Amino acid sequence: MITKISGVLLELSEQCATIEVAPFEYEVLVPEFTRRQIQLNLHEKISLHTIQYIDGNVQKGGRMTPRLIGFTSIAEKQFFEAFCSVGGLGVKKALRAMVRPVPEVARTIESQDVKGLTTLPGIGPKMAEKIVAELRRKMARFALLIPADGAEGDSPMTAPSIAEEVLQILVSFGHADQEARKMVDEVLVEKKKFKDVDAFLSAVYDKRNEG
Image 1 (cartoon, helix red, strand yellow):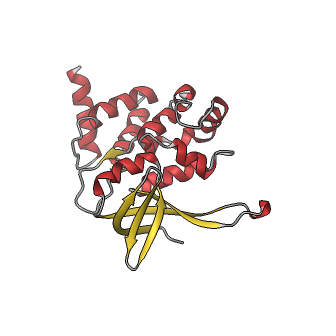
Image 2: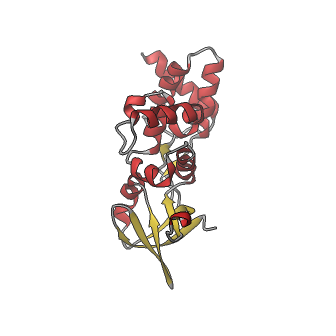
Image 3: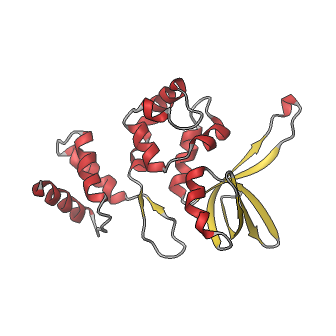
């Protein structure tokens, strides 16, 4: 199974990237949010974390075709796998639907915003309700994804485990989940780096005291 591919981005269409890994060229399907992240890297070397699946239906006389789907980070790949796990959604519908960044979609699911989910291509009210019912308790770490400044080769998204831990601490202190989320988000938007949980927690309360 191919779990990661690194090579030169030769072509990029609305739905797929062609990556040269000499002497081969691979066609990798990409959701819209991934396409936007790599569109400025044409003719440059990129790395994508991949999901491999077989497309087709032998029972209906079709041929089975192996395909790859690519993401710029492991966290985005894991989110997509969770998203696809919703009954009746499937890979093709999920690919079409994922036009927004993972954190935004994850927050929409976590907040049980069914109406917001129906604005995604191909997601109707019934499917939106099903997505919320099956995934809303699994979205916390994806909702906290933030852009990373990272060095060359780092993925452009990273799961901020410190922020996630602070969120849990705030809830244990008696803050409502929604309030704790807002407190963490107010610090995250400043895109500062914190060496540990205590530093982040101090920033949260410093921000609160400013208000």
